[in-house]
Length: 357
View (spheres, rainbow, N blue to C red):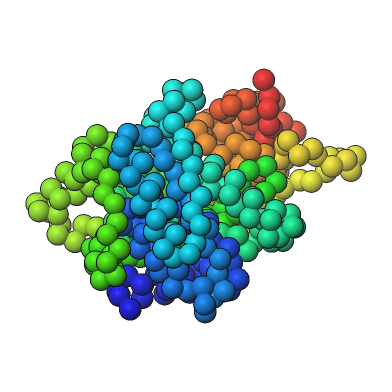
């Protein structure tokens, strides 16, 4: 067993990422990371009773090479007796249509496709039963180097403390009332160990030459900034960043557990007449919210908006504006938040509302 496989198995066990009898939708690009993960998962079905569902996305970014990558993945899967699901998506056209970068469009295409495949598996194998969704996991192949690069990238962009936690071992991908877990079994494995695993087993993965070009910010960090810092300041930079991520993730978990506890205590479920508040709003006790430490109060506000659908584009400036009206006894005051949401403070209540035009 290679070092990479040993670490992957340990990570799966320690974080309970995959359980016996799971169906695994694995994003298989054909590169070293995903091929290594695919190979290890293919060695586990006998003991874990796993069913592997490889999914390949041809983003149409590299004409010719993209088709070669697709053929490689399909041949690899055929050699393992595991049928591949291949999808061809024009991500440049998708980016133009949605007004986003090609990187963002590629990510959207991948996760939308992974989710649709997970839904199909739930319908086919689980007869559509909601409980079966817990047996369907989406596995992606970010590694320890990716973790270090992500944390440094976020630092450069001025992240908050939660952002220092980096990439999570698992998270929920949701569409409407359906959700599936996205798991990252490779997150503790360094790229060198991945390459060693591929060499040991003669996997011969494909290489995306754009990863070696300084055309994206992430590439510049990996190819230029990290080597420079390692040479001039700290040869253990990546290890230090990953360690920071683990510490921040532990703190993040504590703060959000405390946030949920506080919110349960100060949330109002009915008005004075006993009528339940609607699903498009969250109502909290103003004075109790104002008394919270800023670190908890801001997270409570983020959770309140998140519960009604606003999960992005909330700036520190908006939270500070909300602090100003929450902290005073006064007449009705309101702060606008992105995408038509708002906070209104009046009569001892802080009301977070959805879809206000």
